[in-house]
Length: 447
Image 1: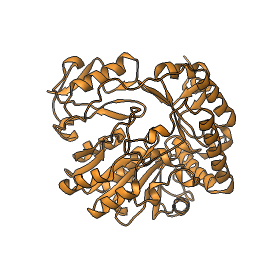
Image 2: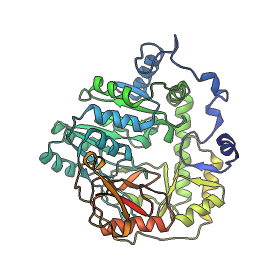
Image 3: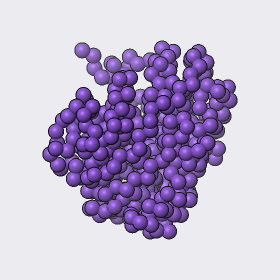
């Protein structure tokens, strides 16, 4: 039986997926054990930083232009949990974008929050679009929610109008938390969309490891305005972060920010954007381009996300060519690029795409409307449940979140009513061999 290390060493496909360093060893030292410390004299304490860690997080704050920035070693997940927990009371209403990551729904359960969803429209290409500021305003008028959590850019690179949304939120005394996990690269090249950090969001969470040269689990939480409660945020970060933080991860995050903010990193970001632009021009018509901006409240897009038409057949063809994509669904395959990608990598991807048979597959199934909320996630989680076959579950209340992983965006959440359309969608994903989480041949429902 081989070890995990041996299994990892055997993988030789080119990574068009996270993490952003793309296994490029120029970003790291090989002797990682040399950097595996605990909180001894001289290297500070993440949960009470007063020395080197405070200095380095202060430096990160200067780089990003924030009031405070915190290193996260439990990923954006812990940042979202801490930010939501710090700004809500048990049982509060909370405004949530329906396409948020599963960690947001975990926060709803932990705080017994009552979600009011904003559902981004589906574009003609079958992709979740952006959030409309007017819709946010209409909901805030009637719910009195004091927190809005949304994601921008999305997994596929859809960017919402954060400036307008932040203005609406602040008009109604609402704190805006932006999950910018996939946009940590925005601030280092002016040709990418602007970061929510500079557009009025109160708290922004970014995953360094997704699009920048940093190790998996490294992320940042940015405090961007006086509306954010620093003391409560720090208290909850101490709850959701490990009490034994990895100095390997901390040093990786710090080195990443130092590299990106320096001359070499800024030059690399410019080269990266130029490669992206050339790649998109050379493969126009074979990958999703500007048509994604039509409709769906799409304010802007992140060009680093390469969307290729075709699901399993396309992703299989890429793997046969020695390329590993980030994700595939029923209709398209996603390749995530980063500053760590090489010229050779882009050429290999372009050659593989050119060899694909043209496909014009569009979403054919009826788009399922957002499920009705029948119970809060907490009420659902503490209720008795029973496993029943999916095909006879219509009308029942789901006791589990069902989602495709990656990216971890729910098809249905705890406490929502199962509909025939949702059954049909889950069945299609199962039949085509996708990684459907939260369900086997049966689904857990409230008894």
